[in-house]
Amino acid sequence: MTSCEGLLGLSEPEVLRRLGMPSARREVDPDTWLVFRSKEMVLRVRLAGPAPGRVASWSATFERSFPLLSQAARAVGLWPAAAPDEEASGTWFPLVRRPLPCPESGRTYTLTATVRHGSFAVLSVFDEAPDWL
Image 1 (cartoon, rainbow, N blue to C red):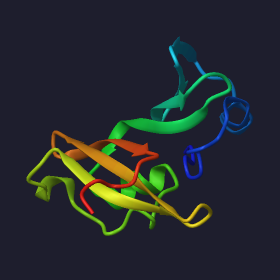
Image 2 (image 1 turned 90 degrees about the vertical axis):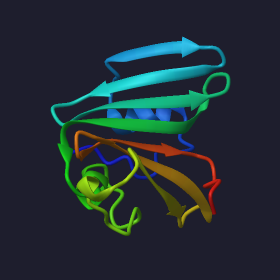
Image 3 (image 1 turned 45 degrees about the vertical axis):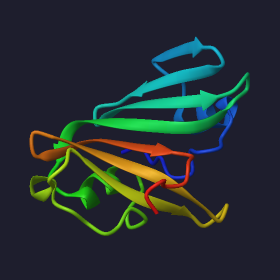
């Protein structure tokens, strides 16, 4: 599994040292998108701003989705930070949102879990504070 904990704020060289070479790299002014593929997931990382840019968001699309938020979050190294747990089949909306505290920076980011066909299929993290708090 790929740990995505602590990706926000890293520069492109730091991301490459940590995750290796991406399967795709695309510049869409002023941002850069990196795509990493593994057997477990496709990880899309957005670096904001001119080079070298910093990770502003990322999304992990799982090859095998998860019935519990804890399982999906654990797959990317974000459990128990993404607590409380939730069953995908019990959600009324296709998105579950959580504040994601970052002890190192003292900031709180936003985690969004996407439900497809009754399971958590995608986790996304943004470097923005939750707007619903």
